[in-house]
Length: 287
Image (spheres, rainbow, N blue to C red):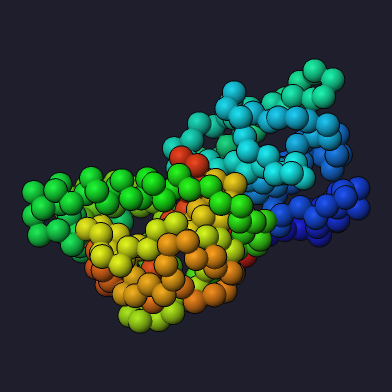
């Protein structure tokens, strides 16, 4: 999906009316008119996609299907559509005069495929019993990391690739591990050499750095980008930052490996907005 000249002109016109500079995504798709008195929304309104919006002028709160959204001081918000999100979503803004402005969003279907992976379904655990014994504690750490809310403004940036290489696994694909069906793939895999550096795709705060390898994720690194948006990097051979560190876009944060459930060296990059898993590829420049 390429940004057209008309779209760029429309965004420029909108910015000329705004006092502040809005966040920029790599592949904006304008879904509303450029009027500060209305919703301004851009991004991929598709299962696995992330959109960014600005509330109408004078709005005190914004809701998505009756759930309040976090608003930045300058009125921006994020919406992530999970892999299996419904086809329709409803935005509502409560205005200062007590009135309500609503807007419907049509969410496009994702295009998922089946992927066969030559890896043990229990990953680094040698048996199902060992996996069950270790997994609950690992999940507790992941849940705690995702609950962290930092004041990072990495969510405003145009994201970059954490590492160069061939995309070897797609978000949303049904995974089959040595003949055993698993859950769908919740990130993007990038094949790279063992030990190759990977970088932060945007600014953020480290919320988890698992130097003791997890069963499935191996050496896991998680970064909060603010506004409920976070990244997870799996299977690293080495982590170069620690929990609590503030990282900048392009900073080297770890090295590629094959720890945990992996058939070979690669970087798995997963992203979530609150509870919704989203496709990192949709945040990157096309080509």
